[in-house]
Image (cartoon, rainbow, N blue to C red; front, side):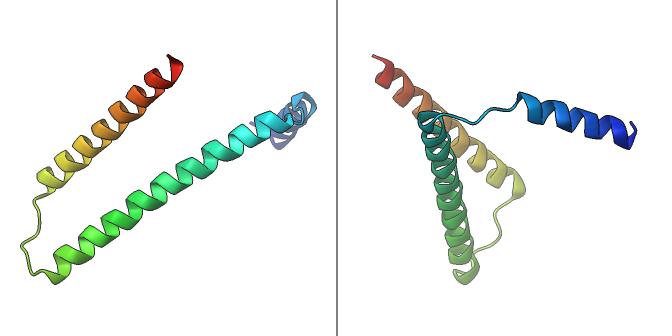
Length: 90
């Protein structure tokens, strides 16, 4: 791709873009802040658990167990979110 083609694509996108409504902006802001809060909280607890394991002089957790634990936590979070979403639609 040439530079002029890329610039033409950018101009087309900017011409199609519209300013979001106030409600749409508020919804987007809520979703982004909620996502940041969830990721920040998860990061904090992972850091806390790692610090506790480091200072407790416990042997390292095997990689397979750590991956399995992360997968289980992710599935639980996903199903909880889906459950709460289905409850709110009723």
